[in-house]
Length: 193
Image (tube, rainbow, N blue to C red; front, side):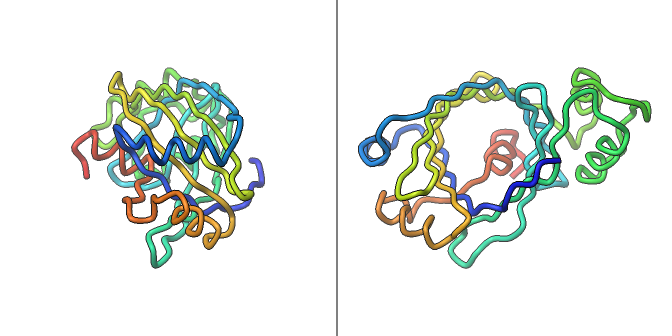
């Protein structure tokens, strides 16, 4: 488990937002490109962000939401595969389900297959091209996604200080747009929200 501080996050999904993207590129300078193929395992009963990236299980939990809709998230658990029994137990507790799996170490394929057998869990493939910037010491990301083959874009602004996030959102002209987490966006695509 890695100790990383909780961060306040604002994220918006869209098809076109060129003025904001242009301003981010202007203010943020050269971007850092990161590409990944990820699997989100979405639970009807959980709002936690559970994904597999680069062969590692990564769970973030939403701690709270401020009065302006900004969400505070913190890493809860990170683990490589095969998953040890204690991690599998924690995962089932978060999802609120019991998976039909042996108590021993569980590989990624077995986890995805077990999730697929449950009506409350769905594995969603997400390909990402993420362009990271730093503006006024705040992390900003523009990402081009393919969600089960469907293209969509997202902008994210995050920092440990919520006021910094709110100030930057206002400067970028994004403050009035809906804050939507990956979990909520995927549930909407699945027709669950």
